[in-house]
Structures are given as C-alpha cells and as structure tokens.
Image 1 (tube, rainbow, N blue to C red):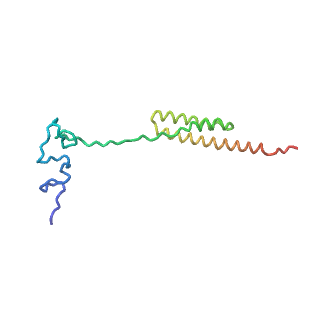
Image 2 (cartoon, rainbow, N blue to C red):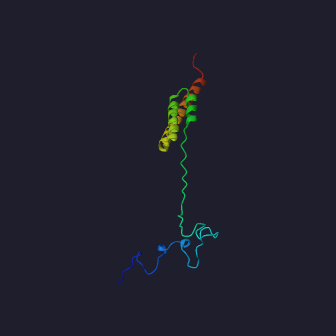
Length: 145
C-alpha cells in the first residue's frame, strides 16, 4: 500500500503555487539596468529589485439617502384642512429624516422616511375622502319643504 504525498511536501522542484509570478522572475540572460541609465526596467518602469504591490481600489458609492417627503407633507397639511394633524405628523417625520441624513444615520433616516410617507398617505386618503363627502353633501338637493 502506498501513501499519498502531502501537497506541501518537497517533490524535488517548486510547485506552481510556490513560484513567483512570471513578471517578477529574473531571467539569467538579462542584466538589470542601473537606475537612471535611461533604459527601461523590467517591472513596468520601476527600478529592478523593487517589487511594487498590486493595489486594488474598491470604489464604494454610498447609498442614496431616502426621500424626506417634506413637500408632500406640506401639501397634505395645507390642502387637507379638515384633517391637518396627519400632515403635521408627516412634517415631523420629514424633518427627522433630514436631520438623520445630516447626522449620517441612514437606517434611522429610512425609518423616519417610511413613517413620513405613511402619514402623508393617511392624510391624503382621509383628506380626500372628507373633501369627497363634503362635495357629495353639497351637491345633493336639500330636502326642505
């Protein structure tokens, strides 16, 4: 029974993962050019013998801040005069969204933005339904004799 050899064991020569990359290997027939001799060096314009690390630059774009819904909150507050408190609550959450964006608290800003949107929708639905009921009530003929 034969034993399999460990991949890290020396088999008499370097394995591919133990060899330096091709562009960093020195060939025996080339003499390095002295620095400042006007001759190009092997490592992409750098002096011989210096290994410049490969740097990877990761560009991280920050996530977009959530919408504040400030304009919508003002419109709901002004136009839905029969039910303005929903617009006022939406204004408070819209202001919180702006403050949290300025402070760099994106999760908190997203939460405040969702709440501002919710109160804008609540104010819009209730305000429109009250306006609609008012319009229907004024359009019906009065039943006074």
